[in-house]
Image: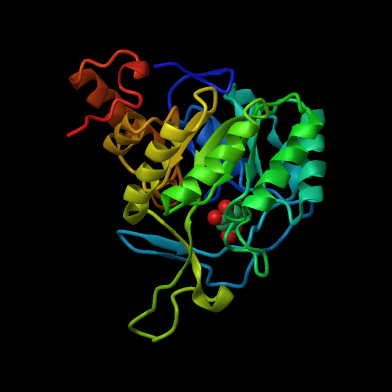
Amino acid sequence: MQVQFCGLTLDGCVYNASGPRTGSSDALAKVGSSKSCAILTKSATLLPQNGNPLPRTYTSPNFSINSEGLPNKSIDYYIDSETIKESVLDSGKPYFVSISGKSLDDNVEMMKRICKAPGVAGIELNLACPNVIGHPIIAYDMVQLRSALKTVASLSLPLPIGIKLPPYFDFIHYQKAAEIINEYKSTISYIVTMNTVGNTLMISPHSGSPVISPKGGYGGLSGPAVKPIALAQVRKFSELLDPSIDIVGVGGVQSGQDVYDMILCGAKVVQVGTCHWIEGPKCFDRIVEEFEEICRKNGVKELEEIRGKLKEW
Ligand code: DHB
């Protein structure tokens, strides 16, 4: 089923989240050869980075914790036509670049470079990374959120811009964030909700120490355990945002049913992160097939028939 998303026609509604298995052109090529309907990079910074000390990821059946600290090959790698040509652009799928600069100036510089590069379909501006030591989560600070969007608006960029948000937990915080995003509806084409639940802690019963090493063991929570949090984000933002702003649902998606639930809550498209990390890119084939089977069983021909149509009690 085709989906209209930020002015593009996508051949499906499931693609990869930024983060796991998205840092190299080889990894991105594997996403491109799967049933993922688009390709999205690891969040880039202006210069290459190695990230935080190891161990920086932990996984269990119900959840994962990471504090990678933005290891990436730099923006120039992800937009270099030689690096990404065969692997990414030849797949014919829309190619999105995620950025998470150390400062607003870095983000501006990266956005300008992306717009000069050929072949990029859109930019995901990450305002939600919890793992950079000494840097708070931008979109929890409404003053910073507004100033970031104001700056992006002033650039009048030719590409669709999405922003990645952290999870919110109180309705007043959703309202404040939505109010600011709505002010910039002519600049922001879509939101991606949500990033990991920041600064969570898990202890190894064997060692008695945190399961990851950076930041005293605090890291972003993802995987099946966060699905109810993610559904709430998508549902609440679909009530509050201007309908011109698309919603990308992400968090704990590992099955066709999870995709279906996200769309019932109002998602236009859905990203898969932790499951991609654990299962590899074949997860997109499985999840898409499961989703199509559920749609067939329910007689759904167009996603518009179910989008936002969560049944009330
Ligand atoms: C990282 C984690 C995130 O949740 C994110 O949005 C960006 C980067 C990381 O630790 O690399």
